[in-house]
Image (tube, rainbow, N blue to C red; front, top):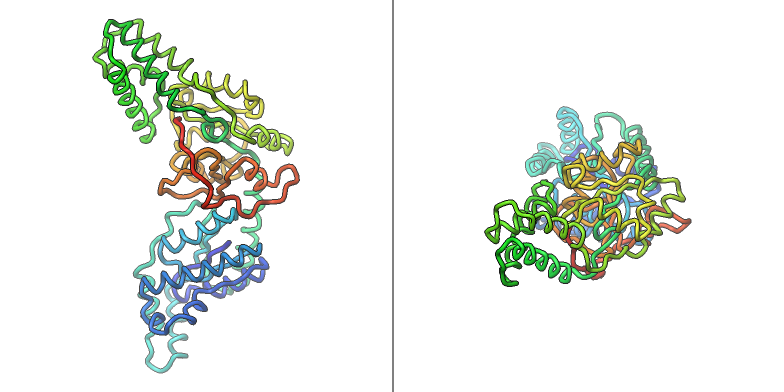
Length: 437
């Protein structure tokens, strides 16, 4: 789906019609929708009126997408919300989205506006005023990933410009569906912890045992409070982009219990956290192994980009190996080893550089918008959010694609000869609880 936008008289409608022809797509214009609305709205371009216009426009687009058609939207798309609604529609259908922003010189636009007003009648300033009103409320395009936004100069003829954009879009879509490499998140993407409450109880027990070893027995509720405070500190640091793990969490937990001096109990607790923090069962997510095998069969290398908490990378590797997943991950990057968690670009580059693949030719699969999606977008990687175990509803930018399972991921990438799934996500799919990094 392509949204062609820009200011009034920027040439967007001409470009949109040209693109529809070149891409064999359906052209849907906001002006046509406005013509079907009350005439008073056309004169004011009020926000409530425009909300109705773009809502109707996207309903028409959804009907065309349901028929498997390529859709070219034609409107100013002056507000972030208007562009975001269009992008979210494409995400729901599991298809690429690009916003083509048409830009013409001030002299060219004024010339076009004068010609339009002349056709309205002598002395008319309707189009001049309309242009100025849209320009005053036009919000810069800062919310889209680089691959989702193209700026098109439109002073000259529309045909060559539209042909150039169509060629770029075809190349972009081919590249996004045939990545040179795929990186995966770990928790809730490839593996999951089946019983978080049991794991939490075990961790609190380890902290109580360490405290008693250090000479300060504590009741379960005090140990629970201390562990939760330490874990919260770890999570707050993680959200700030700081890497911490079992050693830091053990130190903070014991400090909450008033134990600051070095003691053998500290090292015992670190070891217990690292080796036994996931004593509850760990499982591979359904279809994860099949996805790695299908990518290997297609000649597409895979890497892991994993944020660690209590369980360090060396232990996670053992779990992945036990589940038959490690062999499919040519490179494994862990935050406790690289020194930074996602979305820091360093973590993604550490996975891609050994593979010799540039970020714009790679795809990342993960479950979290703040880390997986944002990190991939920052480098120009294509992103896929997987909802197999956790549906992240945090109000942050969405991935390029959303899938509900590894089977949906393989369909999206057209692996194993499967047909592409045109609706890889559904709002009716149940959300599940998230585990911890």
